[in-house]
Image (cartoon, rainbow, N blue to C red; front, side):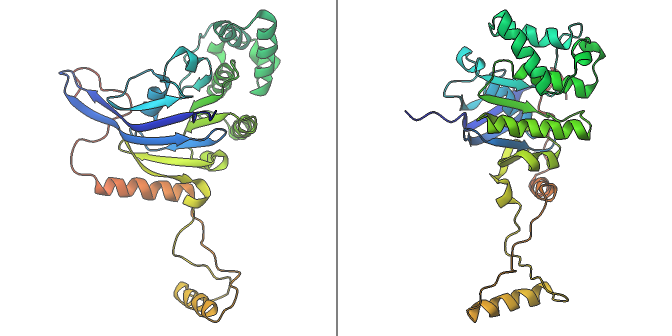
Length: 304
């Protein structure tokens, strides 16, 4: 029996309405996406591009205007799906008067873990996310932003999920914490977990993702393997001194015509930041003078 892909969307669309019920904000338009098992997929885009809307649709927190989504072979938000996924929101709204240990134990109770298993799992996860003994006994109201991200990830892993949805996982972490978070994501991938993450920190995405998709104004503008997307097509680089690009191309062409094996000609790579800016700026340039994009969250009633 062939297992269903962890995430599939077909023409997934979300339009928010204004106070009068008129369609106003096209937060997501015709998203076609399929994640492979065991991959890390990065969802990129500026504010208001549809990243958070996509994640909320996959969680079943909001419902599509058109199209469909499938998570682990089932409709989003069903109990069978929720038992097998983990979610780290951009802001973790956890009980501020619980300690780190109590927080993870609480979520273990929600998943029906027995007391002995909860204790083992709590200790294991707090070690995994790098919270020491002193930190895990402090109340969450005393946690820094970075510590809150760590405890948020621990609660997302309580049920040992098959699929992880991570919204800005490295926000608030210092360089050491960021490196630890990226290492942890790669470790979870090595365990066979599928991870969908959204982030504004492009270097982090480039370090951990197998594939990326770039959203702009609610539409998927670019998708593919990270390495392939970062290759600049139709440009050649010759390892020689004082040779212009045009001369280098002519030299390579002449060498190949003569039957030589050209070993030093290659496509130079760009950076993910350059690719991202190129895609977003191209979209901005093609946009009309209509309504500007709002954030991913729906407009408040009566808002302009």
